[in-house]
Image 1: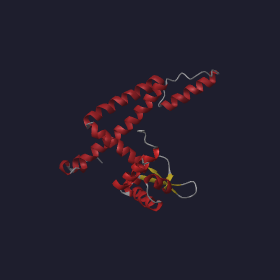
Image 2 (image 1 turned 90 degrees about the vertical axis):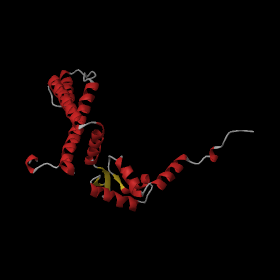
Image 3 (image 1 turned 30 degrees about the vertical axis):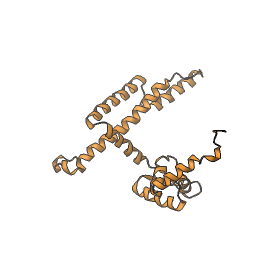
Image 4 (image 1 turned 180 degrees about the vertical axis):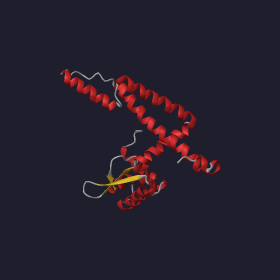
Length: 196
């Protein structure tokens, strides 16, 4: 007697997961989930396949998400509408995540530290950005006729780029935290305290 089970005895796990996702979510939720992870323009048909819904339904929900600012539209390769996640919605999502884990006071301190680090990089390398450093060092290598591997420290360049990106998100988070003070009904200020 054999304890082995043939592959035909098992249900396709992808089908089970897909059916479960469909039964536990609405088409709108599935379309939103798919487009939340879509950073290059795609057609409504592409989204519909991933969201397990019809192209017509996907298009309807994508247009609603575009009206909300969650999605941006462009003209696709063949003249149709293409959809992708809006950069603004990504920034707001990142800022909200930061504010969930870091207080505004701590955020001010971290922003100052990141600005100092960026200023140190600019002073050390004599350029405003990691991209300018890469171009400068490439031009220097070409001028000297020495085509060996570049001396750019990849780890430094990555830290510079990451710090610059993190500073942008932290500034957005701090701006949102400051703006929320004026939206919250309990902490309304007088007109004299509002900056023009």
